[in-house]
Length: 130
Image 1: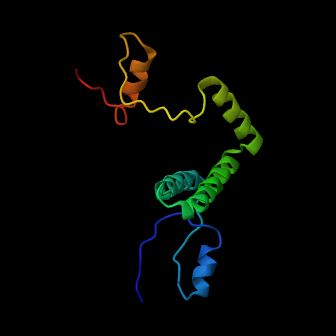
Image 2: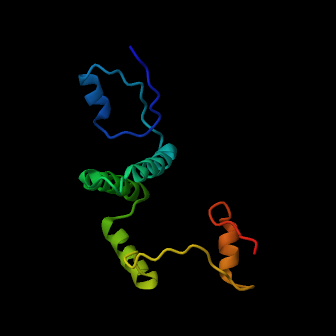
Image 3: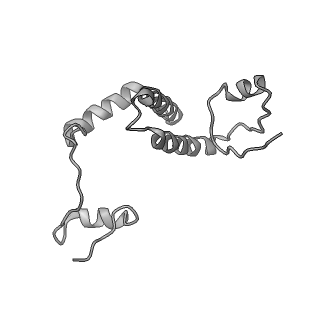
């Protein structure tokens, strides 16, 4: 018998399907305080599995991402209608991603609200000394 560390949220039928294959799963039901964190981690995991070069699995990976998003919405008490309404509102305010715009760097003038915004997120947006 070989043992593997899994350490992640799995779909509802996985433990049962594993058992049918003779695989014993050491599992637990997450506490409410752990569930949202596990869903976030699962979302990040699935997002990294989306292979832009493998068209044969892209729709399946999107389905996994959508399932996780639906569970997150349900967990925080948001309906699909609320999410769609917010999506429409944000699209009207700041647009979508369809223009494929990608910012490499910005130069913000002194006093700009963006300086505080990016400094607060310095781990993702480090200041570049000129």
